Amino acid sequence: MTLNFRPFIAAALLASALAGCGTGGSSSDDKMSRFLVAPDKFTLYNCQALADKATETAARQKELEGLMAKAGPDGAGPLASSLVYRPEYLELNGDMNELRKAAAAKDCKFVPGVDNPKG
Image (tube, rainbow, N blue to C red; front, side):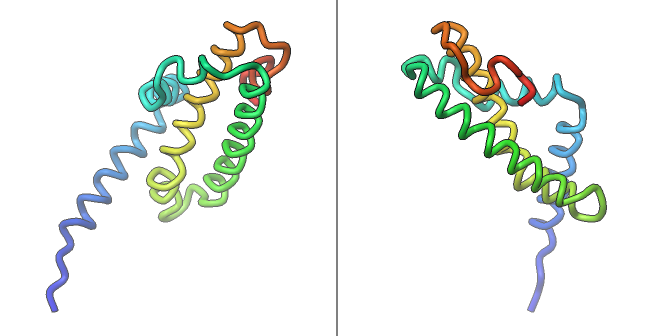
């Protein structure tokens, strides 16, 4: 039985590259988030739909933050976090930015994350 390590090495190198991209700070995350989400994705939503989607998105972001923290900074934690949780987290971050933009354009009274961009 011959075991080919090339796919594992390629995956590890890719994960390292992605992890390096993610540690560049919030501006790098913001750029990636904008890349992952279509502009004006939520323009057809009314204020209630925006609020519902923002609440759902914020809850999932919080869940992913907990999972990334639980993975920890040791061993394979950063690798697992970069491969499994980070892409979805960045996409949700982009969604939240688009939700804020749509809510502001429609003058919605309150959408979670609009008044407080961090939460």
